[in-house]
Length: 326
Image (cartoon, one colour):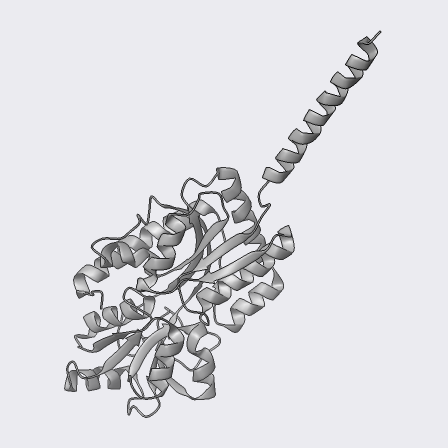
């Protein structure tokens, strides 16, 4: 007489098990908790801007909190190592840029493996560097800068956002191609470097267009040239370094995102798809354009190929120029 009750209890137990399993699967679907985006730079530059744009869009699309954590220092090694050693679950991402591909050659020993410890997500954008000088520095062209540097070898000081940064290697390539000598003064970020440049503590620097375009347009810094192959629409009166006196010179700066290696393929695919969608948004494209950055996007495989090419190219420049950590 208890069989109906037993069947009901069994059915109820099965139903509860199904509900529990369904809830478990729902909870496990990525993302279901906070995402952290590590930026290995100080706030203010485009690396930080990119991280915050992505964080805001992730939160809007997925309804989970996404935070930006600035972990500057060590030539980007500190923040980069945090992500290399993070759980490979897609909840800790890293904004990477030019130095990510330079550091394997620049440093004799890294606390991580650039190729093996990271999963490329997307090439987010590209921009040139601007060659800028302090307004009181009596140099108004690339040829005049070369002449001034040759007249006083090792006397002019140039700033960078750290050893291995695009502005550091841009100047090392420039020195190598022009036979000049200048003193490298590394900073922890673009903002303090620009402050010293405008204050006259430095004479010259290369920096990403987004970081100095406002100062150039405001007249607080003077632009001598741009590192791209062609002039920038946002600065049509600024010549390229090549046309201004250094034929064949060209440097492209880039920004992207990576995750820890061994992150599940489905999670990597979801991140890449969402990042591509973000880069296609009109408001995001306008924010990029306002800072002189061209959105790129694409597949994970395309970004992996880009990284490999950059590691090879700049590895040669580091070796040939004798660039070192300072």
